[in-house]
Amino acid sequence: MKDLSKLLVVKELINSLKLIKTNLLLLVVAAITDATFFIAWGFFTTPVKDKLVEHSILLSNKLSSIVAGKPVGLLNHMLGPELSPMTMKLLMLMGMLFLVMYVVYVIFQGTTWWLATQISGQKLKYRQYMLGFAKINLIWLGGYIIYKIFDIALGIRSIVIQALAPGTPNIAGKILLIALIFLGLAAFLSYPKLKAKTIIKTPWKISAPLILLSASIYLTAQFILNNISKINIDAALIAGILILFPTISLIRVYVTRVITNVHTRT
Amino acid sequence: MCIKLKKEISSQKTMEKGDWKLILIIVILLVIIALVTMNMDKLFPTPTVQQALTEAINKT
Image 1 (cartoon, rainbow over the protein chains, first blue to last red):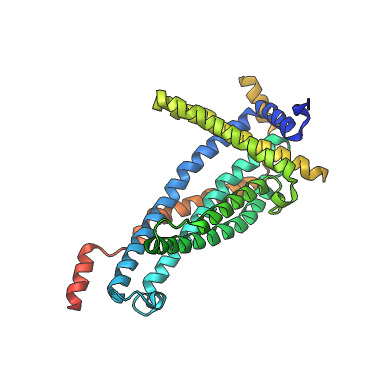
Image 2: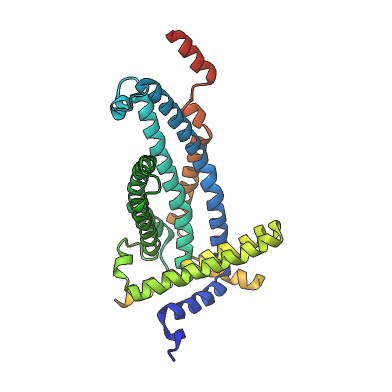
């Protein structure tokens, strides 16, 4: 019978739990930063999203009154003299939304990942890590923007196809979802070493169990929270803060330990 | 527990002067973004129903 504790992914999970125990202050700071991230995300992005929706409705109303039942040359109308100021405003709002999302994400998630590297034993300076985190997230932001463009285009296409042939399976949508999951995993695995190709360079015999174990740990914490919330909502809120955020920090430390171990050896 | 945390705090000398400068820049950046997002109505005014009606009347 194989000794599972000798497997890298299991050994480093045990090490991560020990490291978490000896770095309680950093764990608390990471958990508070994670909680603050969710509040800050809503606070900073909601006004921009609301304004974007308002202007989208305005533009579409004006566009529909101009084309008046002849939906051809929409792009020409949007870039024409009457609507181009509104179109430009809409594009500016979209750009602003992506910028705000990027800045808030980099600041808060960069800090929590840096704290995870500190807990895991790496001694990278905060400034050095944050600059690397900001750079690497430009790649992931670019990927996300491309995904969003395809998502909107395929969404509209799907609506048209469903109107013509109801029940047609949305295969393109499913492929896009897989691409998004891959993008998310690539980003997640890139953060310990700040290298974009980590997902490709990590052997699948390491990355697959690592992702599965991390997902299992997270889902276990969610399961416990869901059951607590069925009994008492207030208790679930407190339990969420005490269980969920430290669990997320544990996963970060664990992933950092495994990735660092693999890429130091190779 | 308190003694353990005190020992941990004294051993966590991982922040240099440059790191604190970056934190200050981050705080200033967040304040600027907060000011911008709280004033979205002024930066990107949406015509009110009254204005839209006036515009429609003027056109006819």
